[in-house]
Length: 471
Ligand SMILES: [Zn+2]
Image 1 (cartoon, rainbow, N blue to C red):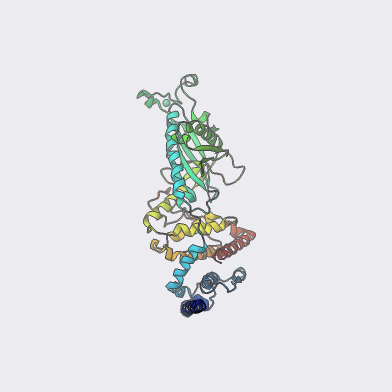
Image 2: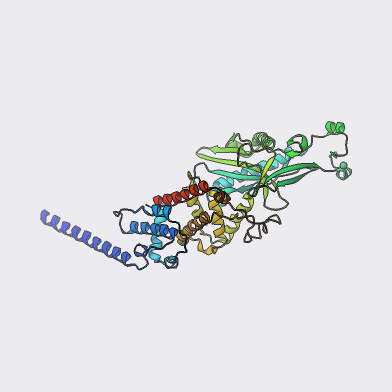
């Protein structure tokens, strides 16, 4: 009896496995016959399309069978190919099988594990700290003539909603500085620099005699004797944070560090958090930590150009830059652009994920993530915002790579803020910005063949890395 029962059980088991296999085979057969499957398509002449098809093929192979050897030759083709024709099959691919796309979508999600970043938490911790810190500065400064810090503005990838990785994540903050009473800032832009112009902030003393007559407790720096001023009033900004008549970046940063150290003890945060200041000459870096949590922030200082969203900032790009030099920064305008897009785009928009994934691959590659961000910003202002959802993810990734490739081929990538007529009118720019000629971010590639070759290799590396992630 026992033997009989075992036999029957085994028969059932075998039959079950056979049925399962049959179902699997039928399923595979159907996927293979899908007329839109890219695996059977004729190869087009566009390099990127080849790459993309390669990716589609890889993804499809994944779906069909795990055993098939993955063909990595596309990368080689990519290096040697030179043409840049429009992809005739693009349209075909666009209406490609929804099945395959759905698979791709889930595959991408499974394979490419985007680090789950809780950017909101860090952003709010840092902004909360800044919001409490700045008023304390104001109270402590009422009798002195230090620059007046204004409400901090979150800028950079973390505040824009995309960040390459969870490690070394830095929250960038720009603190606008206004002149203290009796002082004015004059920006002296150096027109010579095309990209990121240099600037000096000249400090001028203003006559405050009328304010004095109104009973304000302040002597006019221009019309009182030096002796009287020395006796009755704190020194002017010119005598504390300037070099000559120019506001000095390093002295300003040093003053801010000193003040943060004092102000920190007055903050409620100091009871729960540990603050560690990290020395830096052109910005104020600090780390906030408690238990397992830790956030790193970098504060740069900025002087506003008129009432626009363009500032000159203390950030440095190269070593040996004079301490009276401030650099034009578009960070605030760009952060506002991302906020503008997020407000207009559907709630489940994946545009940040697209940028996050590509920039994450760029970590360790010399390619500037700013170039990549510029490409995505250009696409965000041309591709309808309803077409950045999850189901469009792959198409938008492809657009981005195609745009980047085309920019590399033509050695031309227009600046996104300067000279861009599509830049949202809601974001305030100096009057000459929109009509200016857009600077070329790839100018250095046009004038330096070695740099161009290197950039092309990096592009190939980017594709290769992306493929590695998929397989
Ligand atoms: Zn006066």
